[in-house]
Length: 269
Length: 253
Image 1: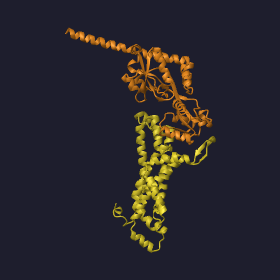
Image 2: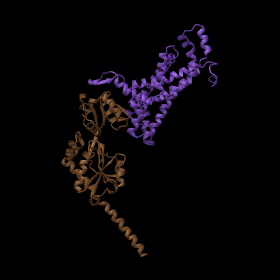
Image 3: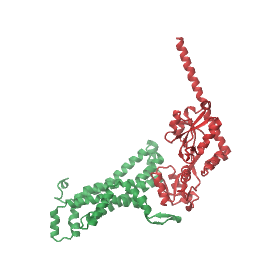
Image 4: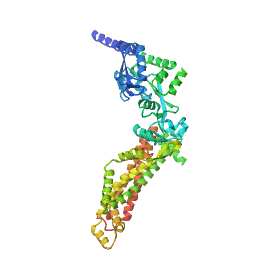
């Protein structure tokens, strides 16, 4: 009888301590000695693999700084859109820093860090010789796009572009390179990625317009650690990065065309 | 007309059946433009494929071996390859090799746009099946009838036009109707080269508003309607063309 009470008390104590231990996850990471971050391996220039096989990119630089501040070693795990939240859930990674767009469904599945560290939007890929400067210049022009994209309708409705949407990116690129359409409307980060990755093929192209709309990218930690110290730390760090303009610096170093979002965040803080 | 559109808006609010292609002016305009494009695509390719079929079947009866080989080659090429691949090949590969026209503001336009290539591809695709269908009809014309006409002094062309073709057409009309109905449905493949036909436009609408179920039902009704009109017309043609004594079962149905 007594042993049973003792056993249940011990069990209760263990449960409470493990629950409390989840709250101070920075301590847990420091005890481990390593911060495991999920990054992209195929998305130039945010997260990709250089010729020597090492992970490099704007997000890798950010991850390195986080690890330095915590005083731990950094370990990077390549993730894809399909598996990054699953890895976080399983505890295989402590943090997602992998071009993840902010959506309500993802906010449910993981603890998203506010403020976002980057935001792309809608822009176009067009030949420099076309001399496009404002969105109004697209009136009556054929603009390639992807079928089902959310920005096709605003571009067509607001600025009178004729959207020719293809099922996939390769078909749209063929059409653009052949000159069958005058521009390709797409997410600005994808366009930046294309221009940086394949600079020889796209040497005559540019991303001329003012990016509109905002598709925020966020870091995320496990949903269980939503109120933990790590999430709070990352949030404060993001605010600091915006205030000091550090993210704008990183953006420039990696050759990414300047985004209005980072400019606004820096000016606001 | 506004009352009709407003009824659809009420339908969405009251019962959650969301059909913005009726109550939203932008979606309505592009949906009906898509419907019109599908109708144009279907009509042009049906007519052109029948013409190609007639010419091809005629050429199969000539004494020139080159002409016969050409037609056989054409039929093999377009019957044995999937229409989607034909569309992509003709638009992307062949289209880029053709000379270009002057476009807006110093750019260049392709000689043939997506719609033109879709009509060409569908006509050639449907035409290749039609050649074989017409050939089956021609071969079903009794040899004795042809000999009788030849002995009366009919030349090849007059024989084809006044004796063989009328009989052949009546015999192969069911198979031809089949193929033309299939051709209308195949027109949906034009989405792959960016032609704004009905399926393409519907897909864009349901991506924007997440009303897949309603749009799918609407598409079903639309295609059943379009195909229904065509097959009804063809059946009327069959009845009108019926000749007593030609065909064993056909006359009695």
